[in-house]
Amino acid sequence: KRLNENDTLEKGVQANIEKKVVIPPLPFDLAAMDQLILDTRITPLDSKPLDQLSFCLSSLRAEITGLQKQMDLHTTAVHTSSRSWKTVQRGVNDLNE
Image 1: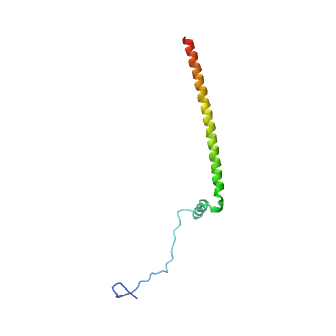
Image 2: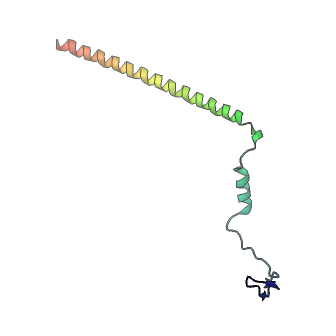
Image 3: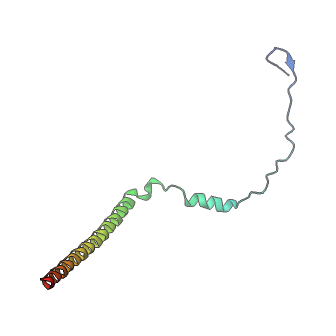
C-alpha cells in the first residue's frame, strides 16, 4: 500500500511476470549482421594511419604524374596538328599565287 498524490491509501498493482517472453524470429541473419559490424568497424589507432595517408599521397602523386603525361601528349599533338595545318595553308596560298 502507498499514498497517492491526494494522500489517500491506494493498493499497488503488481504485474504478472510469470509469462515467458517470446522473441519472434528475426527477419535477417544475426550472424551476418555481426560479421558486417565487425567488417565495418573503425580500425583502432594502432593501425598506423600515417602509413595509410602516405600510401594515399603516393597514389595521388602517381595519378597527377599520369595526368601530366597525358596533357604533354595532348599538347604535342595539338602543336603538331597546328603546324601541319599551317603548312597546308601555306601550300594552298602558294598554289593560288
